Image (cartoon, rainbow, N blue to C red; front, side, top):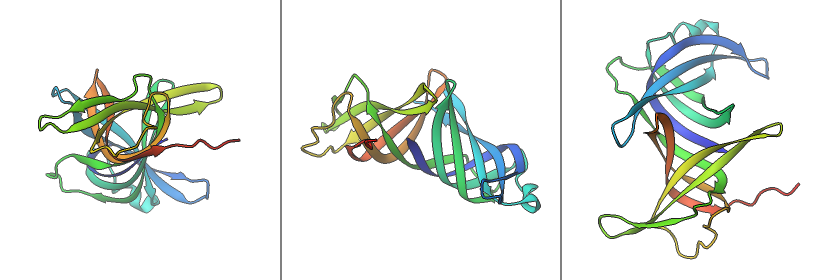
Length: 201
């Protein structure tokens, strides 16, 4: 599971259309793009599918090419090798055309630490920190797909012996987006990490 609480400013790429939810209430569906820049200055557009409460009377507001401010909860899932970003917006409003692209927020993650385990590193000021990668699993039938996140853990706590390769963890922290090999990369600056006890069926 990867969920992010976000606020962003971006350009609408697909105009709003009206759809009906499971509760038979209408909602608006549209797409936005937000440019992401990597450490090596590589750039990639992050495409996000958005849903927000609304009906036909509001659909014309969210036209392609307009700039919009959004906040809400975004899920990240992988299907057929492609990662999908779906934002359920609590708030959506038109932005000034001069407002800059922006995306920021926090991440809640549940998944499994990879085989490489935990790397111990030291920053330029001599402070130690930990780096690890973990994956979230999405299943459709018998097919499982994995979305990887790289975690930077500054000021780690004492006694967290559970932080080892192939262990399940719950992590919360600051979302950091980048570009790696022409794909959007997901990073997280850890604020809290704890063991994830899977539900026993």
